[in-house]
Length: 272
Image 1 (cartoon, one colour):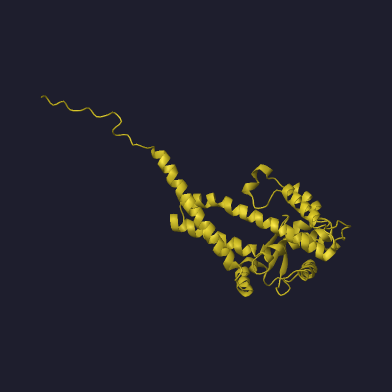
Image 2 (image 1 turned 180 degrees about the horizontal axis):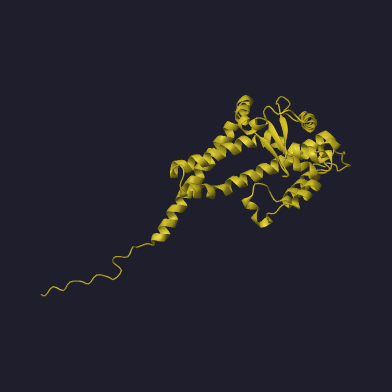
């Protein structure tokens, strides 16, 4: 019998599965694994944050406000500090020391920094029309301290850096890409913090003034300068101002808080 060799199938050298599909699957599994690690370590951060002593927090906070060290307080800052101390007296943080400084800039913002430090941008005073509105801004930042959000943000930032460095090294394309992919998770967490700080401020204003006037008006004013469309709020740290207003209005209604005449703002805050 004559041997007749079998001709191989034309697909013999082709892979059984798609290389691109396998690559995408591997990337998905890797990202899922990193996401789970990030969430788990995030819970650890939340637990540890509650145990960080105030003196350690002050050491951490020094690096953020060292540029203000040695500078004499202005009359406006002295007035603002007294007002902040008064607000703190209505909270459960009476045993903590808070400092407020004013940064001369046209930007409209205020920041809660580690160590009980609050930085108020001078441009903010041009948008505030009442003491109640100023109280809301400071109370919002106090809300971040009450929930220790600043320390949580630092902890999660360190986690992101640690995961990226372990997987991809200190500085390369993969490190930067992975960090950007996880930013969305971090931003959403920050938006939740902002909502809680808003509601903390509403409660604090009611304790001080027996009403919650001025809050939504101020947010409406800030909203006019908000350049991010509502559809893109996933990529920013704060909720859209319309969402903030709705949440606050519903909270005011649920708690039967009153709206009354706002207290006039001390003219010193409008002076240069």
